[in-house]
Amino acid sequence: MSTTHSRAVVIEQTGGPEQMHLIEAPVGDPGPGEVRIRHHAIGLNYIDVYQRSGLYPLPLPLRLGMEGAGVIEAVGAGVEHLQVGDRAAYASQPPGSYCDARVLPAMNVCRLPEDIGFEQGAAMMLKGLTAQYLLRHCKPVEGLQAGDWVLFHAAAGGVGLIVCQWARALGLRLIATAGTDEKCALALANGAVHAINYRHENVAERVRALTAGSGVKVVYDGVGKDTWEGSLDSLAPFGLLVSFGNASGPVPAFAPALLAAKGSVYVTRQTLFHHITSRARTQAMADELFAVVGSGAVQIHVEQRYPLAQVQQAHQALEARQTVGATVLLP
Ligand code: NDP
Image (cartoon, rainbow, N blue to C red; front, top):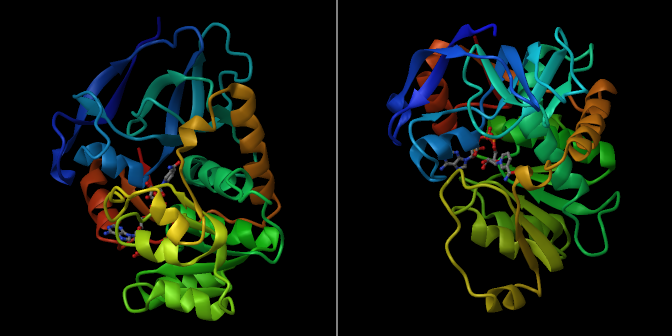
């Protein structure tokens, strides 16, 4: 037994950023199928806000954080793909990555290629694997091909900047939306072919104008309540709306007949954690992600860094829409 100690961010009750505080807690040895990792960087994600606020209810007290990168300190029985001393990164349940060190299931922990730094690793697993499944596995019936139009909301965010670049690499014509002109410019610089400031412009009208009236094949919507209607109205007939988040609040209930009225369109609501349910699947998705990052086609933009002890400020900035790209916490 080699117990160590770690600081960890915990909430006793759901609410605002002020509910988060640091505790000191012992960390034991990994059990079968687990590893202990010492973090060098921790990824901040919007899902952490949903869990902290109670939108996604979880048992309390709750440790937060779904993403991190560091060095493997101990390996439990039956874990064959990792060794002590390996550089590694993960997106994993249960939450608890906002800490110095932790024990977690090894299944979603991947060795980090040497040419990818810890900050990038911590910022790219949950967000990058999400970009991977959005672009590669959520397809309209006839598939996505180079030249197809897609629409991505909040394109200057953590997931957004990865998707913009990956879409460019796939030859897709991605229309970005974002909340400021600066964010629109950033999305364009990262591969979007057009950008719409959705605080000032009607998204569906602009999309129709940009696509000669046809609409887009796929809309990727992580904003939710505020963009839902515009997303439906931007689709081509038989198009696909992939709802994958609710930064502005949950999407309201709707009747299926609405989908016929909008052009016999499809709607799906996805979560990464249904895509990474086995070691082989996680590794295959991660390998594809590591390859696009390693080739330089996708760069991981870590644009905000906070000490772990300033986690409240980090959440405030994310919720106030003050961030671009990814944010990491540093132990
Ligand atoms: P982002 O860095 O994209 O931050 C969220 C962005 O949403 C903001 O920067 C802001 O951009 C935009 N936004 C629009 N309206 C609001 C609002 N009312 N309040 C706050 N932000 C708003 O976050 P992430 O990259 O971490 O995640 C993006 C989305 O993807 C989230 O909804 C997240 O939950 C979802 N997600 C879903 C996954 C899944 O598998 N289902 C996995 C990973 C992420 P702007 O200023 O340009 O409007």
